[in-house]
Length: 197
Image 1 (cartoon, rainbow, N blue to C red):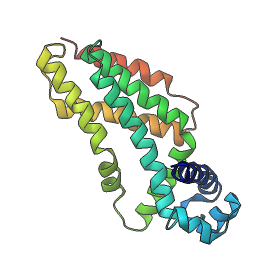
Image 2 (spheres, rainbow, N blue to C red):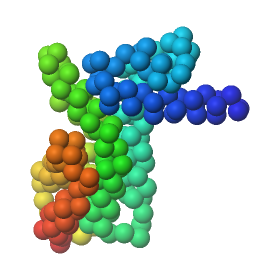
Image 3 (cartoon, one colour):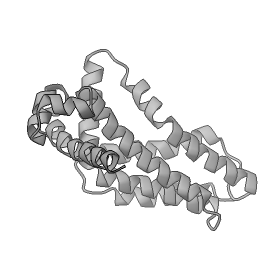
């Protein structure tokens, strides 16, 4: 059992150091060898944990998204909050996770730009990675409409608006290099007050 724990601990250490390589070098110029060097291990040892740099990168994104999804589900299940309160808390939690992971977001943006140059479809990849989060937001809106806490609205449009606020937060944190997105929290509250029944 302790071997599994040590293996996972080592993977996390590699991920942290790999993130530094991605930040310093960009996704394109980061290599498996550079990651191994930064970790103080051989490439052969690195292959025990990951098969290539893309897997390391994808694991970092998956780790962030799983944490966000767990936050969302925990809030969604809380029976002591109303729908507007849940939606507010969920989006603010997402904003906070984005602020905490500003460096990773910059690397993701770099990767998406790399994909767009290589005629890949970055929009498809982003949608694929965020569909569960969007589904949770939509189900919270539907629940609020069903209980009468939220006015009858077009759920897809409101889901797009909430997701747009998240995209705006990412833009402000990565491109504009803002340290936080506190002003978006007020915009969120205003938007949600407009749909309160």
